Each structure stands twice: as C-alpha cells, then as structure tokens.
Length: 239
Image (cartoon, rainbow, N blue to C red; front, side, top):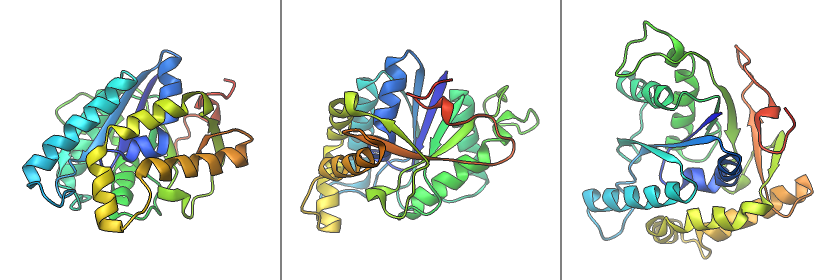
C-alpha cells in the first residue's frame, strides 16, 4: 500500500503517527510524509530563510530513518490558508503519493495551521481523483481512506483505535530528535520545561495504557462518503 501522512509543520507527523508509519515501512509499504509549512517563523535567532532551510533538512533526516519520501509544500508558517492555490497544492501532494491511506490533523487541534491542514487534506481527497480537476499532476484512480491523528498532548481527542508502537518507540523518538530546532523553539515560546520528545513519550504511554501496550498511537476514522476502508487498514489489525 501507499501511505500518506500530512502534517502542518515539520515534526507534527513524528509527534502523532511516526510509530505507525514505521510499522507500515517495516511491513514493506511505501511511505510519504507531506509537510504543508516550512517552519519559517520558528526561531528566536535565525532569519526566516535560515530557519526554513534548517527545518527542511531536519525533516529530510527524519524521513530517511524510515525510508519515507518527503513532500515539501513550502507554505509560510502561521499563514496556511484554505484557498484555491493551497488546495491545489494539497491535491497534488495526494496525487503524488497516490495513497490507500491518509493520516491528517483532527479538526479540533490547538493550532490553526493544524486545523486548516487537516481540512485542506480532507477537502482535497475526492478532487485528487477527479480527471477534470486539472493540476500539475494527473488524477489518481482511487479515493483514499482517512484517519485523524491524535491532537498535541492528546488534548480533547478520543481515539477509536490504537496501534501498538512499543516495538518502534525508539525509532519514533529518533525521528523526533531530528527536529532539534523545534525543541528549542517550543521551550522558548511555550515555556516548556520538558522536551517535545518527553511530551510525545508521555502521550504514547497514556495511549498505551488504554490499549494494553507499553506505547500506542490513537486514531479516529474519518467517516465520510464514500467510505473506502476501515480500521483493518491500520498496522496490527487483521485485513
């Protein structure tokens, strides 16, 4: 299968679903990680151009750890908009990956870029398969199934299914550790005493407790027409 995760910022996918992506990769599936914004406001010292270059390099290093293909959309951080040019780029990201399964931000996550990226991805799902929706890439032949990923910190997100990621938790941690610039930025802006990896590990343990595992990631199925899959598409579920 082709698997596409779409995150608003570099490190978003690692926080929410990198364990599940690693399991897919180990099973021989093809992984795409699409990043909507370039993180170009996330530094207290570097210029916009400098931090964007750093964030892109960090994201590529993370993707390489599981052999994922990076799709870099390069929109400005904090200014993601649901307009025609942006939706067109999301359609092309989906067409490039031609996914069976997509992972997207939930509609009630804390950050506007997260919410808008999730809505854009959901809105682009069907147009990506429509021939006369003309973009840089041709239409795909299937409509992918979508799952919402966990909110940051697990806040106000009730999973319907869990993936046991205990066997790949160290790999997920290494992927997140690639994003050193984001860890520094989160500490500076939000006054965090703990690292983003500590936050991820705490949420993984909490989801694992609910799932009967050491570590887990939680998901909700996007139940919308047409329904093209089920929880059986997740790693660890019987097809």
